[in-house]
Image 1 (cartoon, rainbow, N blue to C red):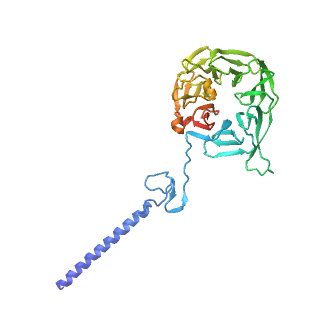
Image 2 (tube, rainbow, N blue to C red):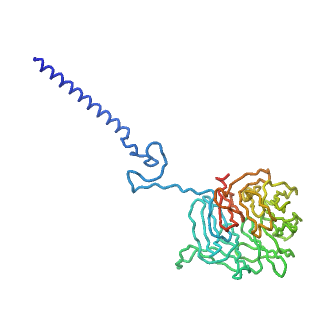
Image 3 (cartoon, rainbow, N blue to C red):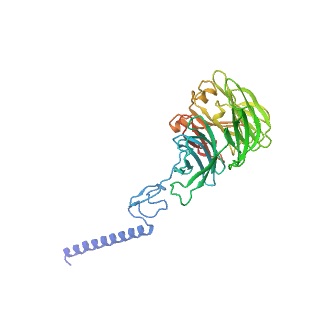
Length: 418
């Protein structure tokens, strides 16, 4: 065979071998990719968390392969939440198996509004107008309330009972409910709900005397349980068998705390005389947080054990009017405490509005004496909050309060804040 012909054959054989090797490598790699389900696109293929690529599981947003497909964004509920920027006229809260529901009255128009603590939505329940409702207490199901309405002369106060009822099917209103109610007897100046929120205590000034009534929380017939010459008082019903009356405090006069039986109307003096006394009693009637006029234009705050008649320093310094006891944890009290001490005549200057504070929320355990900072509300709200009208839901999951500076309404998630 000629030498040239042999060389051509060898070259041809080399080319065939290379082609064969290339085909083998191509089919080997194709088979491997097909069996593992991967491609050269790192965001393609199935993922139980959406097509996110890499290990970024759970990321929400748009699918880059299909711009018409979106994934839901998780709703973040802030721990400190402003429920109403406009003044309110009292509120009530109830905890269900799934969430806490709070309802309140718009002070200007009288609408009833509602929020669920697991949603940012605010619903208007009723457009029935009850203007100038500046205070209210609610029953357990937050379906009825006792409220105080300021008259057109901005001096006369009248009390009403109202209940929230579904709208008639023939009504074209955009709200699902309406308010129905009635006026309560004249002279009622203060009231409080029983611990079960199925009864109401009302304090009225009639014929120059202070008259105490109890009634079912359905607008039913009231029963008089006492009459007293004392007329300037704050009232509460912390424990089923205990109504409390505290004479309105002033640094220039002595105050007293009394326990009253809702069944017999019998009074028992617990504290006093103490200058500038203000008090709030725990829901088992074992402790009282009290504040008095301190030395040098200050306020002094104490925990009083009712069983042992002993007094301990509460560590914090604030007015009892800025505190509320736990419903579930009965030995725990939550207080709005000034960030810095503000000198003044206590409690007079705070009542008159000539003194305002910037508050933090503290927790005090009356049984152990432990004190914990719960929230620096100023740093979270980015505004000055002088908290008052504090209250809790049934399970002590949320603390509610109003800002004395503008009467706005707030909630604080105590579970995430602890």
